[in-house]
Image (cartoon, rainbow, N blue to C red):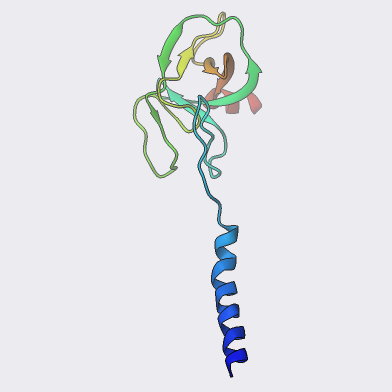
Length: 128
């Protein structure tokens, strides 16, 4: 009887401890780019009532500072106000690009450089 009880206890402990071993732990510390939610279609900044999609195109030189991210939003259900992003931390600077209208594209400071962001409304119009 005690052998059977020992086996039952071992099985119960195994069933309890196995899921705990596979749980993820820790969080990433944001630097400049905080990472977008998996459910968003792309990384963006909302500036001047327009949504700008992040590209991997480096921009140099930049023109003038036009603003900064005011809030980081990591939940699609939250309605942002002002200048916000699902990727960049608060305080990340935004810039105009020489000879490019801000209605078409802007630059964002990221990882020691500047990346181009394209206005999603203009981007869809050009693809048609």
